[in-house]
Length: 467
Image 1 (cartoon, rainbow, N blue to C red):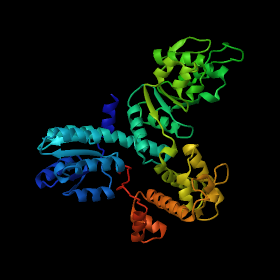
Image 2: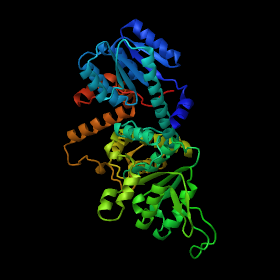
Image 3: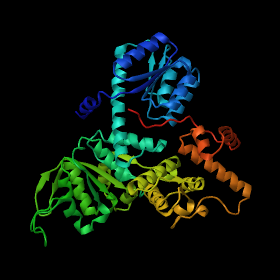
Image 4: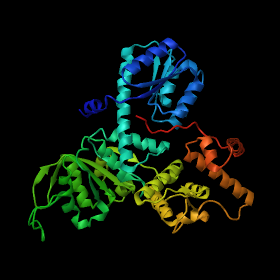
């Protein structure tokens, strides 16, 4: 039911498509058909042109004739796309039905392997699936952008976004895991905003903030006279979340007695007020934890049957130190957002600060990074934010990084310069021309330094879909 509604809502989604094919007649037929469906189509006739086009633009769908990339060239392209543009869908076209190549291509990440010539009816079926797929991705990205204003580009976070898109489709419990500060509530909000309950507000509950003796009455409500001080009827969080989503953060902190009652809510779909009867609720349950619930089951602090129930679908958010390629982009977002909100002049990070940001481990994750960046904006009166502006509390300065003051000066300079170049390249998404300009270097000098330090840059594109 929801799928049909989604298709009706997004049926006019304009996809960006590129076709790489030397067969002009086949290419033009394919182009005309896609354009008749309202999509924007570019055409190229060589592999180099395809790479060049994808360096400059983002495409929802990429059609490529296998003849343009013989041998390992096709698989190199698939690997490159998965690293630089994981949201794009690749359809391989071939005049020969090579089963081994087809299986390998799909296992590596291609959407499909189509044998030429194929009918427009077959193509229409593939296109309908892709339209639905990218409509959902578009909603997912728009939702996340609306909630937190940015998107992370690491492959680890692409998995999280795919998990959000999948979880939003089904009315089953979801368990979100990850360290403190990684953004578990943001993910829960995104799931809710993409779900069938998006028209109602999500109810958020911090289980760790409710005194253990009040958990039951807060979650399920109570009737007048059910205990001393219960003067009037109170709605519990689950009742407030009827026909919506309820987010139970720090689910590991819930007492065992309340866990038993929560299990019944999930199993039977009804709640029992303190001092009252049972009644039905329709609520989408999303839970989050920063603890290992399986270990808590082993020591008797969490019900095993409840863990199975809340873990129907799961999303794990990796810590920031395991996806360092996201740090610079996040820091820039937090800095610009804070400057805009508080009417500061926009600032920039100094080269040293960029290295410092990228090399810190951020055990407080995104929440800590945001706090440190905002502190840096406040403390610096200048255009450039320096390490001293960021390093004002428990986080060590350059001593907090892995640079050793006792190391040989030449080695220190080399390691610093390598980190600085990598950070600036990440900041500019691998664009060497813009990176060289930012660093005040000639492009040729930057390329020489990259060669000397063996720094390689994958072809990079902006992974945010352009509608």
